[in-house]
Length: 335
Image (tube, rainbow, N blue to C red):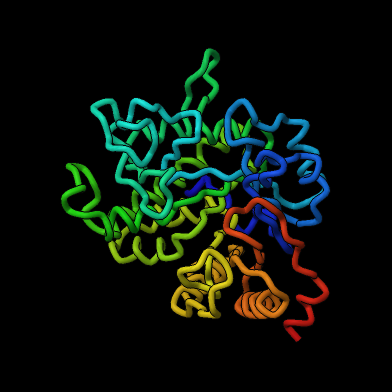
């Protein structure tokens, strides 16, 4: 019998906001006092004011930012390593940055450069070395020293997991010349490894906070990919039990620009999200990077019609917070 709490038991937010850094005038630092006043029902933020361990919010700051809102979630990338995080070792590449050539000092889990994000490299997320960075049982008293461990201790309700769609990269996009022994051979195998990773994260976090849950960002087709392999019902149950929602970027306004692409709804992905998540009672949080009343109104109407919870972010840098969806207006959308 499964010991995992069904995702439907996790709190659901009526609206949400998403900010990972401050603006240049504020030296890009997040301000906990400002965030505490945000009117959103769910906030997704970096667990540190400046992205470094030295800038992590303390428990009192986290409690103040949580306030009366339903969910305060901390961002963590589980599919890529970033050279501005404390775990990064400059000896891993020739120039000390993620976009340099790997050296003999680089760990086995460090993969190819992300051409769209020069500060990051893909990771072999199934490798124990990378998992040890995300969560572990190290410390003088057995306390974990990984990113997830810190987030749980800070008092966040959930971890917001970015680059979950790294499974698709390793299963379908990685070049054969970059594939090493032990790498997944196809999309299903890569998806199974990602779902197992996420389920293990939830299991570990709930040793400290039994109500903790995860919100993967992107990777909407992961359930479909696992089902294609057949015979993984227990894993799917663990995965569903680990998450309290899924978040998706660029679902309605998709294109090559950072913001304000043309209206271009991803109908196949919308249907997958409805079938594999909404129908299971799992909230779908959608963020599109748009400005302008007309675009925002159209985005919110379409997302609500499809059963999702929208947030219109004004820029992809996520350095400022837009206002929340108006619940009264949302009710009008459904009439």
